[in-house]
Length: 192
Ligand SMILES: [Zn+2]
Image (cartoon, rainbow, N blue to C red; front, side):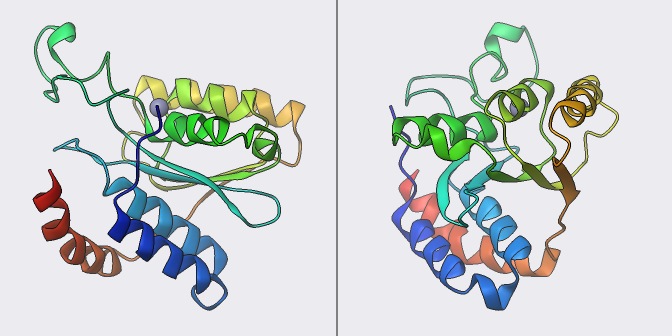
């Protein structure tokens, strides 16, 4: 099952993509990752990801979401089975899944992923298994968490295997982001 992007957000993503040269490629793609995150139903943290092929095409986008629109909890505390953690699919994984569903698996090789939060170890596994060439992230707020450290260990090993792999932080201006958040929050509230 493929999760569908909100049409208004898709329109804005297309708009940013068309103006990518003017905005600067890295900034444009990171902005698209942030916009993808607005699709998420997670009330606490919204993560978004976009995969860009080596020919600079958008292969797919993803955001943190339940695997299908079932009745799952979004809470973060309590018995693990009552929290979101065992159920939620991370944005990076969803983007890869969406690429596969669109028969674009081969475009994942040497593609670049932009994600608004540094990946966990499990998403880093996916990045390396599908042989991505670049990983660009914005926030690194969980830098000291175990899953981030493990992700960095995977990345360090991956660099030995794929020596042209790039990992780089691209920070989007916070005022620019709140501009988009304000613009879309009302539209999105209505749809939820
Ligand atoms: Zn993850």
